[in-house]
Length: 460
Ligand code: FAD
Image: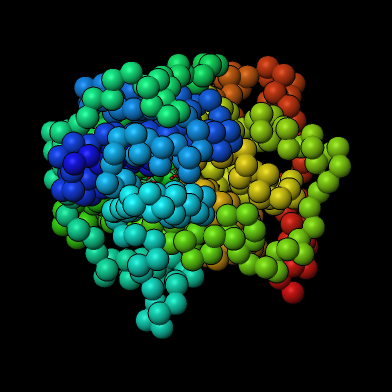
C-alpha cells in the first residue's frame, strides 16, 4: 500500500504527526512538494531562496527521494496520487485562509477518486481554534488567550525521523504529472540568509537555548545585540516545531523570567494564528471596523515618503537601520519592526497594509497571521491593539534600545563617522548629516499631533 506525504509548512522529519500517520497507513510513502505559483508569486527572492534551500536539505535527509512538482495543487496532487495508486494523502493541517480553501478543494478532488486527504497536526503547539473563552467565544485579547493556552497544554514531541518510513524512490521527476527539478536559487543581490533546513534549525535552537536564552529577558529588546533566537524563519517553514522547543524548555520557565518571556513570544505566534482562524477577514481588513473611516496621506508626496521608508531614507536613523536590515537580511529585529511600523502609520499617515505588503515581500519569516496582526496592533486597528495614543518617538526609541548607536552604524554606513548615541541625531553633526544622509523627511512632534487628531476622529 502506498501513501503520499505532501510537505508544506512542515519541512522536517522529526516531531511530525502527518509523517507518522502516513507510516501507519502505508508500507511505502512518496514525499512530495508542490511549487504553487499562487504562493511563490508574492514572495521575494530571499524567502524563495530560503524555501529552496530547506527543500534541498529535506531532499538530502530523504536520500534524494523528494518529488517536486509545479502547478495548482488542486490538479497536481490528485494526479500524482492517482499515478502512485495512493490510498491516502497526508498533510499537516493549514489554518490560513488560502491553505484551508485549497485543502478543501484538494480533498474534494481526491474524494471523487476514493482517496482520503488526512490532516494531522498543525504548525502550532495548540491548533488554532482550540482555545476559547469560558463563554465558548474566541479570545480577543492576548493575555486571557495566553492563560487559556497554557491551561490547554500541548502534547510531547512526536517521535519520528528519516527512517520511520520506507520512502519511495520516484525515479525521474519528469515521469510524474507536473514533475520538475528544484530550481536554482533566485538572485539574492547580496542578501545574507541563515543556513536552511531541519538540522540547521535544531542547531540554532540548541545554541540559543544553551548560550543566550538565560539573557533573553534583558536583551530581547536590543537590536544591537544578538539577544533573540532568530528561529522565526525556521518556525515559518516548519523546519522546527514549537512543540520541540517548548518541551526542551521543560519546567525551566517556572524559575526563569527569560524562559517565561520566550514562551510568551511563542504564544503570540499562536494567538495571531487563532485570530486569523476565527476572523480570516482580518488578513486584509481592519479588525476594528471604526478604522475604515481613517483618512490617509495620498498623492505624490505619500508615494515619495513611502519609497523613502522602504529604502531606509527617512532621515530617522533607527527607522532607516531597521528598513535596511530588512533589505540586507530578510529579517528585522522586533523592536525595529514596531518602530518602523509606527513611523509608517503615525508619522507618515500611510495605510498599514502598504507596510504589511512590503514586509510580506521582503521577510523570510513572512507569515500572514503574525504580520498582518502585528501591523494592526501597531496601527491600532487590531483585535488586540496598542493604545492609539502610543506614538513611538523614533529618536528616543533609538537612544533607548540602541544606546551606543551600534545598530544604526551597522546598517547605515553613511553615519559611521558619528560615535556613540549621537548617531541618533545626525542633524546635530557639524555641517549637517555626513555621507549624504538625508535630513528628516517629516517633523516628528508635528506628525504626532496630526496622528492623534486623525485617530481621535476615528475613535469618536
Ligand atoms: P524571538 O524573540 O526569539 O521569538 C521567538 C519566536 O516567537 C519567534 O521566532 C516568532 O515565531 C515568535 N514571535 C515573537 N514575537 C512575535 C510576535 N509579536 N508575533 C508573532 N510571533 C512572535 N513574525 C513572524 O514570524 N512573521 C512575520 O511576518 C512578522 N511580522 C511582523 C510585523 C510587525 C510590524 C511586527 C511588529 C512584528 C512581526 N513579527 C513577525 C513578530 C516578530 O517581530 C518576529 O517574530 C521576531 O522578530 C522574529 O525574531 P526571533 O525569531 O529572533 O524572535
